[in-house]
Image (cartoon, rainbow, N blue to C red; front, top):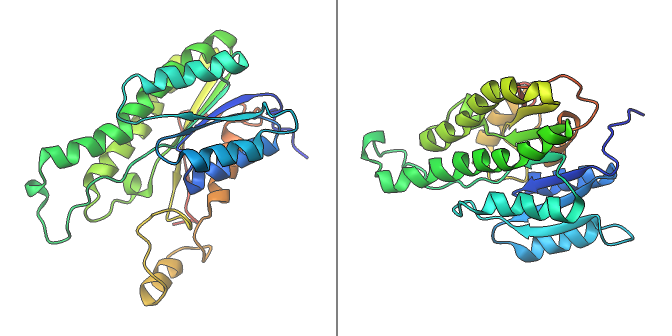
Length: 255
């Protein structure tokens, strides 16, 4: 079996109470990593998951609040991990927010700035702040892995999702440039872009002809699962990934 080199590594997963976040946290814990679970609202879910993953000594996982709209939140969340475990090795930036969706019959130019600006701010700016806070310690230690979770809206687009797609596309631009700054210091940074994913609020059609059309347009004939996404994150954020950086890995069944 391939050794992913994650035993004893420290991992921060933001958006840890969503389906993808929970699957990722479990995947890293199964490899022996210590996992910090950053949450916004669902404290009980985060604390239950932390208890599940904490291990026999109770010290291998903990839950920590993380607010997208709080400019100080990324700094003190990263600081909490570094204080508890002596450093942060892996960041999985999975926190996001849908925000307003434009009505199909409304015109793009009629969407108010106060409606779309928070969508861009919440889905791009906190990720940049968190990466800034995380990368400093990684660079000093000469090793780090960062994975940003994007959305199929950034690549394929979707009616009414212009602002969400624009924000998520910013993550792709971030890693393409950041790779030049941190790569020589042993820090690899990539984007994972899920397609329509079972278990996530992905705008899926209900069972019926529309859902069948979605599946028939997917070469594998099935939607991705959160576990599919988690396994991709696990590889990219492990020692098994020795030289992949600045890339976008799409997990969408070949769509």
